Image: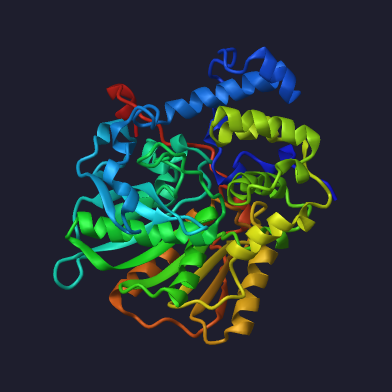
Amino acid sequence: MTSSVNSSAGLWLLFLLPCVLSVTLNASRPYITPDQIRRAGITQDIANAMGAAWEFEQSTWATGSVQTDPFYRVPASSGSAAPGTLLRVEEATDVSRYTLPPGTALSRILFQTRTLSGSNVPASAFVLWPWSAPRRLPGGKLPVVAWAHGTSGLFGNDGPSHLKGLSYQFGGPFTLALQGYVVVGPDYAGLGVNTDASGKRVNHEYLANPSHADDLFYSVQAAQTAFRQLSEQFVVLGHSQGGGAAWAAAQRQSLEPVKGYLGAIAASPVTSLLDLPDDGPLLGLLVTFVLYAVQNLYPSFSYRDVLTPQAAARWELYLSLQAGDGVAFSLLLGIPLLQPDWRSNKYIQLFIAQTSNGRKPIAGPLLVLQGLADSNIDPGTTSRAVQDTCKAFPNSMLQYQTWPAVTHVPLMYASQQVWLQWIADRFAGRPVPPSCAGLRQSPVLAPQRYASDPNWIVEGETDLFKLALP
């Protein structure tokens, strides 16, 4: 069956397409050359939409391109550094460049991490600080939450530390900081920092869950080195791509235990692409993005063995532009992306075998959250991964909660009280409920009465007459 994406996927493609809200921008701005249009087989209208998306994406950057921001330049001595090593600290990041909630402060760090193939590479992260510290732990230390973000892109400019709203805004990091936690948010290797000390490109290994888990642990280690007031104890919270990273963190803990790890929350998690149904509206896009990692890991692989000819031509254009998700949405939406036999490709199978979640041992508490109306991550796939894990490892401290009528991004809002309480319980040392327990949440009112997908984004504003409005 050929996979494609259509308009029914909605605005929240890959859970973050604010760019599609920017159609009033200057869509005639030169961006795609006539030769590129011809080779990619696209129309001028598509090229114009890509230009509008690109213009919007640039408006979300906090500091211009990462290529011109000195913070992202890796120290020459970093090549031999071990994973977890702190490479650079920007203690007081200029918050005026960001759209942060009042009462929060920002730092940025560079640290050494590890790729899926085991190579050591530099990466970047933000540290978001609360105003006060009502949750101080014994000894006066500040509690840490490692935040694993969802899809933000494939290239350097897509790192959340480089974005004014840190990508998820109140869907994760803002809320955590306002509740008194210090948030350590790695960009994942290849995002933010995208070249090492020698100038060699660091490629983002999209959906390489074990690699993202390494980014989480090593960014916390580096932040603890940079800021001695941070606690040794930490909890992991992630959504979508980050949900997969959080689940992988629980699996990593069973293999490489880290002192201070208290547990993880995996919301709308990526488990295995091979298990997602063929008629999923975003399967083709998820697999297409994964090809960037597969190509880098296995040089003999060719994306033309997986993509349709039409998709391959457009994918080549996208890779040459190194733009963000909004441009990809404009370029790839509505065409057949995958060849019918894509699942049989040996390199795809190798990648999935290395990176899948579920059916593997975990250590520490793991809370899995899933919206039952999620069209991005199939709820049945998540449920099967949970059930299979519990069957194979019945003593796992795994809890599973589902949310009827809740879609992908809205899960982070509908379940906010649950994940905040769960995090507080872990720092308080409260016991975890029975192993492999499940719970189906119920709304207070009829589901149809609730706002569904977000129709807003946080943007900067300085005009007093606008800010004074209630």
